Structures are given as C-alpha cells and as structure tokens.
Length: 111
Image (tube, rainbow, N blue to C red; front, top):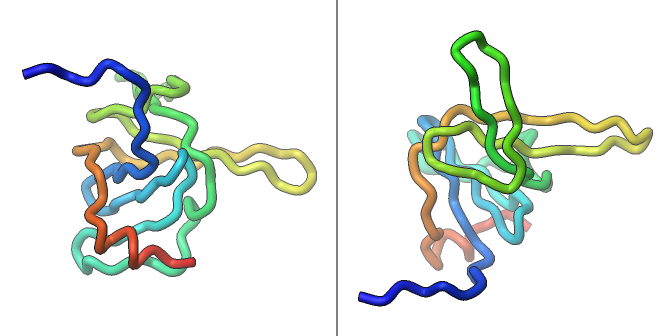
C-alpha cells in the first residue's frame, strides 16, 4: 500500500479529548461538541480561535508549547488576541484521537 507524501489538503479535523470534540477548519475552531451529550455547543471559549499546536506537560507541571504539532497524547492550544493586543491561550486536556469529521457533522456546524 502506498502512502500519500504530498501536501495535506484536508481542511477539517476533529481533535477528540476525554469530554470534548474540537472541530477545526483551516486551523480555526468552528465547532465544539460535548461527547457525552453528543450536542454542539453554541458557545465555548475555543470557538473562532486559532489552533496553534500542542502542549507538553512535564512531570513538574510546567507546560511547554510545541507550535504546529498537534498530536495524540498532548493537549492542544488555541490563541486569542484581544483588541488591546493581549494574547491569551486556551489549553485542552490530552487529545485521545484525531479524525476527519463526518460530512453530516460538518453540515451541522454553527454559523
């Protein structure tokens, strides 16, 4: 079986943590779904924020950002820049899976 070695063209990914799914299009969080209730949330702090990468949590509790490398086993982080230029980060719990969303889910994304 040959594997594709070209540029990744898929626009949508879902980062699945223990309790939440973060649906991302072109590195922007477009939807957040509660895994237990299986419902998209109309408001969540990560919505419309840019996915920046992964974070590694050291045994001493220090969080180390790893830009552009979201992966299973690490938390992911999103950034938001306020009107006054202050940047905030939102960090998730560890990612359990990274998948492509089902077409039906993409059609349900809040506008």
